[in-house]
Image 1 (cartoon, rainbow, N blue to C red):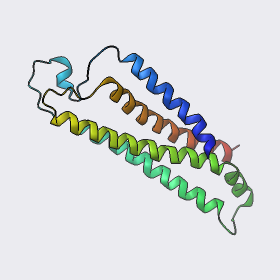
Image 2 (spheres, one colour; image 1 turned 90 degrees about the vertical axis):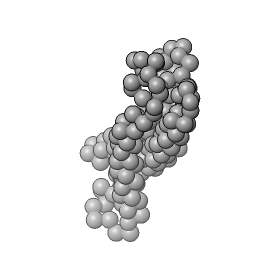
Image 3 (cartoon, helix red, strand yellow; image 1 turned 135 degrees about the vertical axis):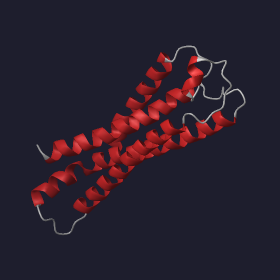
Image 4 (cartoon, helix red, strand yellow; image 1 turned 135 degrees about the horizontal axis):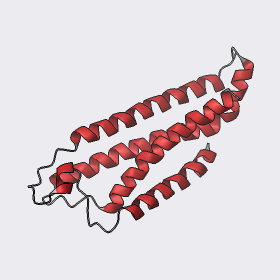
Length: 164
C-alpha cells in the first residue's frame, strides 16, 4: 500500500510546483469569472457555485467508485472460497498497491472538496475578495488533479494485472 504513496506524493509535489510556477506574480485570484475581466465590477460573489458543484460532483463520483473498488478488492482478497482461483491470485498480488491508489484518491479528493469549500467561503465573506492567494489556487489544483491521477492509476494498475 505504501508503494502507491511513493508514486502519488512526487506527482502531487510536481503538480503543485508547476501550478505555482505557472501562476506568475498575481497577488490573488478571483473565484468568480466576471471579476477576472473587469475588476471595477462590484464584487458580489456566488457566481462560482455552479462550477464548484460540478467539481465536487466529479470528486464525489471518483470517491464512490474508489470506495466500491476497495470493497471489491477486500471481497476478493479475503474470500474463503474463491470462484476463480487464478483470478483471485492475480487480484491478491496487486491488492496492496491498488488499495493505496484508491485510498489516496479518497483522501486527496475529500481534501480537495474541503479545501475548495473553505476557500470559497472565505472568498465570499471577504470584502475585497483577495483571500484566494496563488499558493491556495495551486494547492487546490494539485489536490484535485493528483486525486484524479491516483484514481486513473488505480484502475489502470488493476486492469493491467487482471488482463495480462
